[in-house]
Image (cartoon, rainbow, N blue to C red):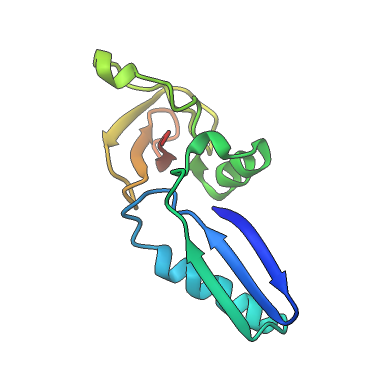
Amino acid sequence: MIRDIILSDSRIEIKITPTYSGCPAMKQMEDDVTKKLRENGFNEITITTIYTPAWTSDWLSEEAKLKLQKYGIAPPEEVTSDKSFLRGKTKSVTCPRCKSKNTSLVSQFGSTACKALYQCKNCLEPFDYFKCI
């Protein structure tokens, strides 16, 4: 989500892009970044939101995907070119807890609009799946 960091003397500008254009968490993320920068000695802080080009889950590194999985969120398993939904097919999503592929979609929307809610049929745990955006 961080696109660029521009340092100039005691000033810092952070350019960010939301994962989802209507993301309600953007203000909280801006506040968290500002707080962390203040804790590290920056006083002149500018947070700039950039919408173009739009963020894509294809930009997630393997390290980021592993961190999501450890947190309990299933990372995107395919690239944004996946069009299975157009054929009426449901994604096969791996459970982040037990690693089973025996899962089912519960809702197109999970805890946030950029995630879908799935349930594992093996361990019975519900989990969020970070959608391919």
